[in-house]
Length: 295
Image 1 (cartoon, rainbow, N blue to C red):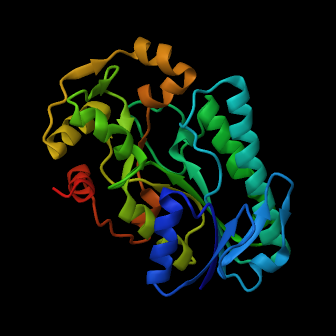
Image 2 (image 1 turned 135 degrees about the vertical axis):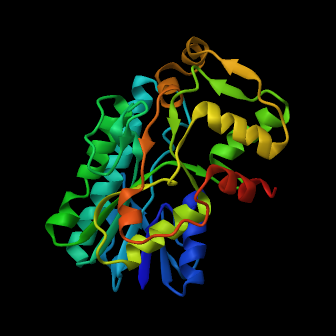
Image 3 (image 1 turned 90 degrees about the horizontal axis):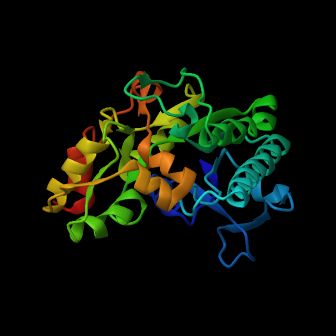
């Protein structure tokens, strides 16, 4: 296939481009600067500019673009920026997909769509939550409507926490655990819907190549764990004890509303992937951490 990827410079985007090319798909990357390579095309989502030529001959578009949700404290200004940037970039992509007649759009989202679900398992048919992140995800996904209305097969990639050898969640936690400062967050009973980077990339390829998959898809491992279980498993994988407890009130003082993303969670299950026969390379957290840490 000829696949156009927006957001190709991030952790997932970089690995996705490599994985698609390894599978002998042709990849075109959308960049927000002057193109510097033959596979690059420019776009400017802030001003709504995406040349139709960029999608010419495309069999699918993957949209991973947008600022990191957990990169900065959620001030009112930051929340507006997150909402506007992710919704606007998706609108531009979806309208271009509709205009160019591209048959498939795979658009990033997050399991934060479901809000805090406690220990109750959630699937792709579960209702949305009511907090800020859930509201952001609802509007983010709704922005794909022009593509769906034009007849494109739209897949909403509700990603969990990606475990990678470098960057991502493990990149943030490894230094703390290396200094023996690791520990559970709050009660530790909140679920962490993890997925290995290898399975994240394989799952995106799977939905692109499988015409029967559409709508929301949970990109999560089949065995979600609580924060306490995750902390214990990561400590074991790194050979470092993790005895500490970070109180919820301390996290909220340090992080503000953003702390809720660490103190709440979703027991999200990859029901659609499993129903269509996807096989996980790392079906357990132990396997994912072993691969990511080289142990």
